[in-house]
Image (cartoon, rainbow, N blue to C red; front, side):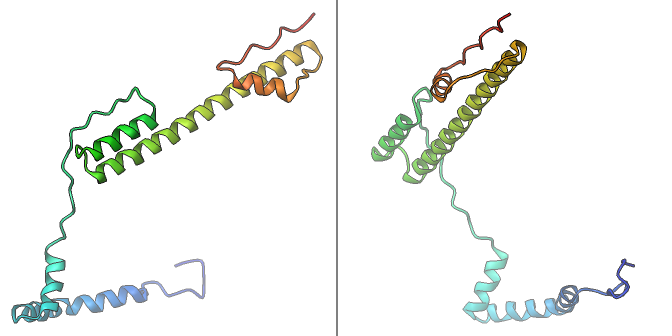
Length: 163
């Protein structure tokens, strides 16, 4: 029993469940009629039987040997793919899939680079804050210095606290 005193009584079936049960009772008869119509030449019934009995085939592309120079940047790899498609060495659909994959990888690389840069900025800020806390003073820097620090591959260490 649910906590709702005005709720459905225990054992009550949902409308959908009742309809499915009623339909299942006559399914065998319906299938027999459709099969009979299909055998008699009814194309619509035959199509229905075949669509349920024989699953549609999926398109499967053949593997195409293709050497992609992974040492090159994504834009040059994309040019390599386009050239292979143009030369008939690679199917256009396969080329599109490869270029879409390159775009996804490039996007992931940008995200990873952004995460690394953000981590470096946080570490640098933590070092500056620690240096300011140890010296009892404030760390003052302008946005130009901060931007220059972010543009460096590795951020410089903060100045040692003065004693």
